[in-house]
Image 1: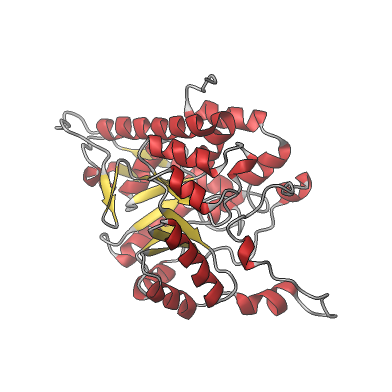
Image 2: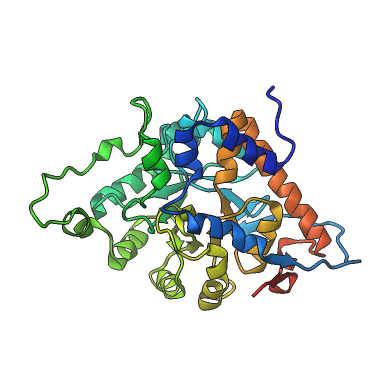
Length: 359
């Protein structure tokens, strides 16, 4: 058994020290000057938790429910691509680590392992990330393939119609090895473009016509026989529109700072979005969560649950499925400590007056 780091910060430090420059660039880096990447974490550091004492805490629990599904803890493993770059078992290792802690995992559409193999390896991995495949027909076909494999809840990522400008990846000359790729997307092929004509734009003249509209997303939600959450909402008006077209929930996200550098931190936008859609609507969030206290802050500001990505990356890179399980356990332990010290016995007790935001 490998020697595991004892703390979450040691996981993060060890991963930065031991992974290659290419892997750090891809998994831990962000877009541009990485302002948004840093801001995601800074926003949590600026939030203060107000302790409460002598509260009744007997029988406390981190258990909650989401979309009628029971969760042992309000944490899900965020979708991220190509786990085989970090561990030979890839997404199977991550799924097994998540299942050991009874945590839901959202399998990335860009998984490096066949979705059927991952689904069969873990009962906890029954959420699937959808991406727009360029047409209604291709996107629906991907969803139907996932349904047939046993996935029951979908997360449609809508905030990355094009890849962000990621300086670290460019400088590291990151590229996938020939034996690793998005195996589940392979049957659908990749778009091929002829040489650009003079004055023609690759983005606006070649790609923009294949990007989805709100009407397309509404059609997909109405067609798929499963809940669909929209991931990548930062504007309150977009959140309201998602509710209007029947999305089962939304995920407040800036893609971990990997797409648009200069976008606000997700925590900064969370309260306004929750206010817009109402406190009962399923609003989740990701971006910048590194400790259990961060989970408490996100819940206090209205999130029903959070997604964690980079902490899982670090656990997987250092110790495979065991590392994933340990990171999730540490996050939950820290959440429980923060709940007890702030006088919250249950997830429902975590309200906005638990947190003071520095202005």
